[in-house]
Length: 47
Length: 134
Image (cartoon, rainbow over all chains, first blue to last red):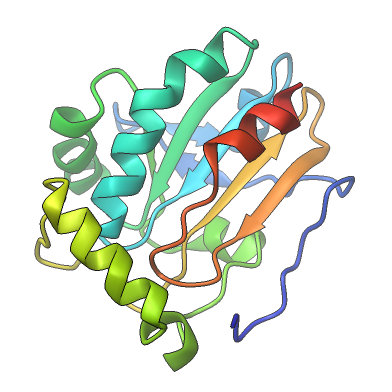
C-alpha cells in the first residue's frame, strides 16, 4: 500500500530537529525526550 | 478531515499517555500562527509545533503521498466516518502530498514505535502507543 520506504524502526536513534513552539521560540525536539518518553504525531495538511 | 480527526484523537488520549510519563506533541506544516489557530480550539493545552519547511518530516522519513495512499477503499470509508464524526474538510495548507506519521520515543531518544501511515486516513493506533509506552 505504502509507496515509500519507512526510514526509522524501533530501536533506532530518533532524529533531532529544530521546530518552532506556539510562542514563536525555536525548540529543539530532543529537549522533549531528554527525561521523558515522547508521543510525537506528524499531521497532514490542515484540510 | 483526517488531520482534524488525528488531532482530536491525540488530544482525547493525551491523559492516558501522560499518566505513563510521556509528553505529547503534534507537528504541523503551518507557520506558528496557522499552527496555533489550528490546534488551539481543537486541542487546548496540547503542544503543537510548527515545521513549515518540513525539515522534521523529512528527518523522520515521512514521504509524499502516492495514488495508493489516497484512493484505497479504506480511505473512502474512513472519510465518511470522519465527516459523520464531525471532522469536516477544511482548506488544505502546506504540502498537500505530505504523509503523516506517528512516533513514540523513549527518554534518551530511542525510537519505541515508528508508524508510517499506510494511507492518508491512517494516523496510527492508540493501543500501539500504549503498548510502546508500557
